[in-house]
Amino acid sequence: MGVREILVTTMGAKTVLGGDGWFCISDAYCVSGCCAWPTYGMIGCDALTLSMHNLQPADPIMPKQDAWQIFCDRQPCAECVITQTLSHAAFPPIYSKVIFRVRQCGALSDGVRGAESDPAHTPAYYPHAACHGIQCECLGAPVWLVGFDHAKVNTRNLSVIASHAEEQYQNTSHCLGIVWGDGGSTNLFNLLCTDGFTDDIRTNLYFTSQVNAKGAKAEVQNHILPFGAKPKDMEPRIFHVELRHREKGANVLDRLWVTVNSLETLTNYNNWVAANATNMAWALTLAPPDS
Image 1 (cartoon, helix red, strand yellow):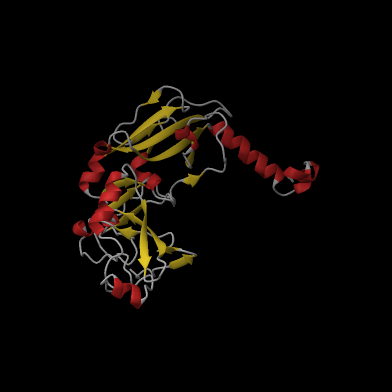
Image 2 (cartoon, one colour):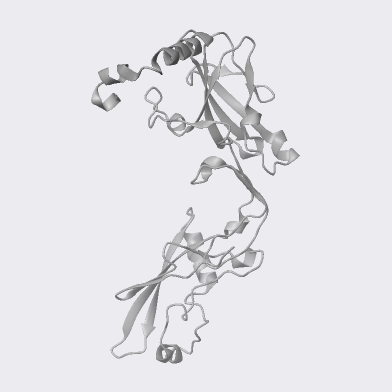
């Protein structure tokens, strides 16, 4: 892991240290204790000011224990912005402010988390949790971002689900289209990215599902989602699936739309493609936005 450069931005009497990055505040709990912390040397404090206050360039701008107390006093929060006032060697006195961000060590985050919590919404396995703080290379316990494998499901192409305004439906980006078969079903577990899975994870993962989203709950047993009765042409049976972990309570790790279409719908679609794919003259009759 590369060492992140410490960005220093000066705006008049204010100095922003670290840019949009953050300093690890949990040094006492870090694996290697190698986290960088704001010092007078980082901001280029002049020798006269250092001498006046009996300081060294390596001395902290604020003791980490003091910053930790500020962080705790502002809970609940994931990140805290701290401003420290400095007095410079001059007459009359000149004051400036140093601004920096702090968070708890990211290496403390371990165990199973949902792919939904990742900005890229991508399942992954990390043998060690990383801190991601500025100039911190701490490594923690393993982390699993559990979710549906992007190679096995699709991403919906509708920006808004017009028929279902609730947040859990709007946030469901994965989808899978299936053609109904008599007695058919799908194994939802096989759609997951299982890199690095342990037996404990396999045992504790389970799925819940609703038919047509707001309808009755669909029974999912041993990760198997049955398709149920044959749907009518152009009236697919739609399942909204949520992936959960027994030790994570109500937290949803990932979500999926499963659309089960009738064989008649597939046959009609294939016939339409066969009749129109070779002769595209019909496209000229479409309105400009659709052509």
